[in-house]
Image (cartoon, rainbow, N blue to C red; front, side, top):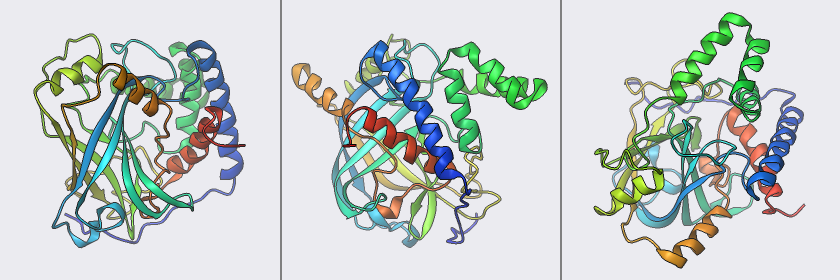
Length: 330
């Protein structure tokens, strides 16, 4: 096992500001098109599965290198959870998709990743250990292509990679998208790209305490999750995996999965989703609150600021998407 290192660095391309702004403009066009179809909503992760109230407990006796920002002092925080499908469409849960598990920790107080002080710490996680592509240009290109329908991806890949590599990419993407999903209560979720844990860098994993898959054949993932809640509170370990070296734990290559044999995850907090959740009209009001809220990896403490090209791209795209939803003044 390698020792966590502080010798990480981000590598900035000279054209990032211009390029990221162009990406954002293209995402907003998609967002506007989908909003005409479905009503106002996000560019990605448009379909909200469930809104949930939760509690995050920061654990005691953490190693010194993990004691930063939110994890500096043991304690309990109220939290909100948004479960979602990852795509631009609102479609049936049975259709393969990336699934999102976002956590908003309330009641923090510190310098924010965007400059001003923040009272919140967001973690935006997906059910994939890493992204399909190393950098933002490939990731954005694929998302833009897929937004035109599943078959629009083929000419994009062909033009970008050529015949044989595009076939390889299609097989890789098909395998990833069609990977079995047991439900939000029993799957692990990942940041997929790194964040800071000053002065270190790390990735985040949410590991479920429960492993049974009861309710797998229910029609919706919301029903699946509620079925688990009927048995009692649901618990998850929030874990960090630390940067050791650029070869094994790169900051700028979002497609590289950091191997646990080199950098194991350590549990730093426990997320509890109580079985006693709002119901009826109270749930509808709470669900609307969560749907209209911001869940953004940059809505974070400076000590946990996002790192790497993909995360820097998300900063620009997410902000533009939030403005389109009317959440920021012009």
